[in-house]
Amino acid sequence: MHNLTKIRLFRFLLYCTYPIAVLFLYPIAALRKKKPGNLFILFDRYIIGGAQRIHLDILQCITDSPKQIYFTRVSANEALKDAFYSIPNTQASDIHIWCDMLLLRLFSVHYLCFYINRHKDVTVFSANSTFFYDMLPFLRKSVRKIELLHMFTHGKKGMEWFGLANIHRLDYRIIYDSYTLSNLRKQYTAFNIDPSYLDRLLFIEPGVYLPAQVDKSYEAPLKVMYAGRGGPQKRIWLLNRIAAHFMQSGRPVEFHFAGTIDDDLSEDVKQRAVMHGEISRPEQMRALYQQCHVILMTSAYEGFPMLIKEGMAYGCVPVVTALEGNKMHLSSERNALLIDAVEDEEAVVEQGIARLNRLLNEPALLEKLSANAMAYARLHFDKRKFEQAYRDLLLN
Image (cartoon, rainbow, N blue to C red):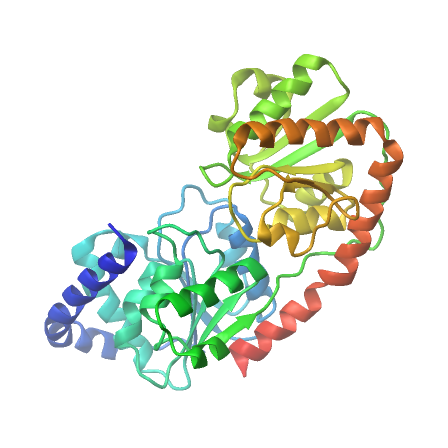
């Protein structure tokens, strides 16, 4: 079922249950003690992921402001829970139980809206939470409503459809890669959205930690890494084929894998690779970037991943598919080696192997691209601009 259809059906049910919610839930919400602050934030989960690290960075730049955070989807693990819950001036709640079941969700939407509407000068900010979009028709018009859209997926079930269905209720939509921005503009045109709504699109690019100094050794073996999750979008099975090729050839390449991808890798590759598991501590992740030479990604679609930005800050050369989001910052022979094939999986594997072989055979090229990647990260990925933009948006 298309997300637009699901949104309309559930919204009809929400309107139907509103009178019941007013009768039974409004008195409870009216008696609930208000907590300090007028900033409400809805995130999906606190598992490890690039999106979650961006969410943490946003929270870190507003630690001086009281805020309430709600997690609206079940988390497969609690890897980043402590990091979220320990943010100063934060009241965090996991409410996924009230969001997962249809009947409970119908009434929890109303209850939270009743509670939020009691506050003055409210800002509600959300990322990856469909619960937020269900709330929008029932929040006061004076409430500032802001979404962060991580990616345009080109499917019937992408998050971009929730924003489209609520375009007139959102004060701002934040994006951080040119590919998503371009596709949103095309979507607005296709659905005859008034051009004035383009003014509500804000471009705020995430920044990364920039080390004061990077002492990198370029001696063999060539160390290649991937960190993150699996799934159809990431196409880990292609990474597995590239790794298996080098492991069978005996060439001096060492593969490092971190994150929740064990099920996507063959037993042989797992036995021969360096498996780091899930890494939740920033200093551990930085140590991995420090020792590796290459970030290898074979994604079918996405924006510009944090993994690439963070790796470039430590001189890791991106060997990644030439997606539009990646090409926003990466250029072959300058600061990366792009895999030109995207849809042809056989060609992705062949070109991935060829790019790594080239770095093996040309040590001078590896050092040059590494230095250029580091310099580019320092010029373009400074976190201070990102932090100031979010402070201005959420607190002013």
